[in-house]
Amino acid sequence: MIPLRLPSLRERPEDIPELVNVFHERICRKYDREDLVLPPHLLPRFSAYRWPGNIRELENTIERIVLLTRGNEVKEKDLPSFLQVDAPPREAFMPDLPAQGICLDGLEREILFRALQKCNWNQSRAARYLNMSRPTLIYRMNKHNLARELESITDAGVQRQTSSRQGFTVIRKDGTVAS
Image 1 (cartoon, rainbow, N blue to C red):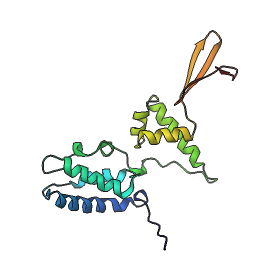
Image 2: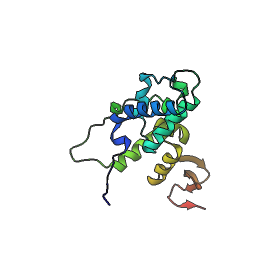
Image 3: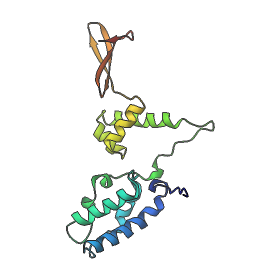
Image 4: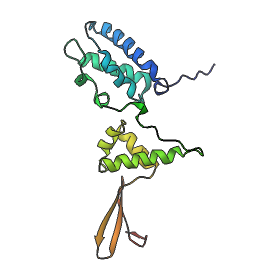
């Protein structure tokens, strides 16, 4: 047996437009929709997506588009919602990298935290903003132990509540946990 390592789609985004065209032609023939046009201006949307399901997800997405599109031309509204998001170009976020290096986990945590704050801790909106699924966002929030901190004023003073998937943990001002 010879092990082969094939790079994922996210590692070769330059191949995505060609793959989209090949799948589109093949699936149109399969369903007798040769007249269905996929305009070139929609191709960057496919390249901007990360394709966590890899090539099979891409092929299934094209098949869905071919089957559900009414008319002879694919329009933006015919695309799945994850391709309708106007994502900025990949080059839009290029922080200056320090000479001593960075902690990728710390950077990911900070980006997640800022996106959650920007979306007022609405996980669905934050996931869309970050161009990922909500379960992926929740997984990464748990990985980085991210939880919304709420302050409330009570007779005992300011308390910090940390929301999590399990509920609320109340942490008193002195750092003790209320039961």
